[in-house]
Amino acid sequence: MSSPTKLVTFTLSATDGMARRGRIDTPRGDIQTPAFMPVGTAGTVKAMYPEQVRETGADILLGNTYHLMLRPGAERVASQGGLHTFMDWQRPILTDSGGFQVMSLAQLRKLTEKGVTFRSHIDGSSHELTPERSIEIQTLLDSDIIMQLDECLKLPAEKKEIERAMQLSLRWADRSKTAFNNQQNRALFGIVQGGDDPELRAKSAQGLKSIGFDGYAVGGLAVGEPQEVMFKVIEEITPELPDDRPRYLMGVGKPDDILGAIGRGIDMFDCVHPTRAGRHGHVYSRFGVINLKNARHRDDHRPIDELSPNPNCRRWSRAYLHHLVKTEEILGAMILSQMNLAYYQELVQGCRGAIEGSRFNDFAAETRAAWAAGDL
Ligand code: GUN
Image (cartoon, rainbow, N blue to C red; front, side, top):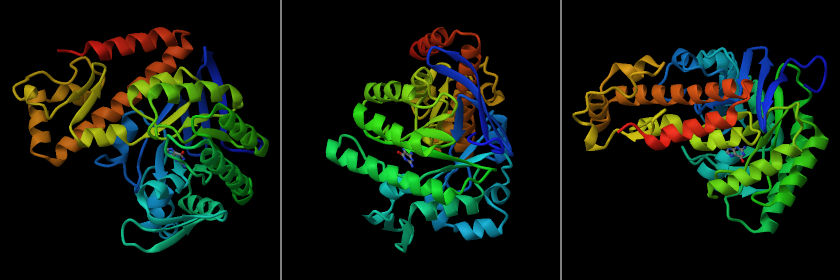
């Protein structure tokens, strides 16, 4: 991206309004964008075999520095041949830097200019994460796309506090870039912070651009603000980001959030929602979301969607899936995680085709209308 020998590159192939269609090439394979990255926090996409995840259409997974540094430890993963070999997923992996998870999971956190010290949520042991150590861990994991360490605040927050966290994240961005040391076989992404304040967001984007990254993430969203606030921040920030670099909206979201963010210029997403919702009996399809726990499904002979390209959506009755969910059978979590990830991939694939055909707005409107109509 930033030099001719860089092995991770982004190519934009079509635009439709603010929506973009592109491809990220990496030594471990390409990533078609807009892309949804299933979350494999602890070296597994919960309840799914890696080949099943791939069959849903996923080009790339997300892994977490925080979880893997605590268990089994980054050095141990490295001695096992890296995360791809350890979990037997040979395609690209993006790793988050750990800051966000420290803030949401760890105990006794202490944030300084140097980094963050905290106690593990697993056994209370003490750890330190600095921008440099985060890059080292992500390199030990053999990640293909590395994220800078940042500080993500919950909203609402005071402007002063948002500015402090944004400026700290910028200084950490600079240290991350130095520590990354221009590795050619992987990419380093900066993270825009600045809460819901347009001026602070623009400053953050400017600061990151002058450091120079292979891609730009938008962080600090889906942290308690209404969807319209998130959409406003996105549509104000994407024009500030370089056209020739991928843009990644971190931790988002539900299908409707993804559709809205693609229409505002975002290329990449990750979220635990499809797999977590699946484990709780919620299934996404072109009809919207169904709660299979509901008793209205117990005598329903119909499959989830008899016209779905996903065989699992045609295979079992809603009555059977309701039974699996009610009895908390492991197979229920497996099937519903697969269905949800497959639907998310169907959605981003639909967006790619629509952008290529210059009909993204119509596609988005038709998709939303089908969700609203449901199937009952
Ligand atoms: N995941 C969701 N939001 C964020 C964020 O702001 N920063 C990081 N590092 N990860 C995230």
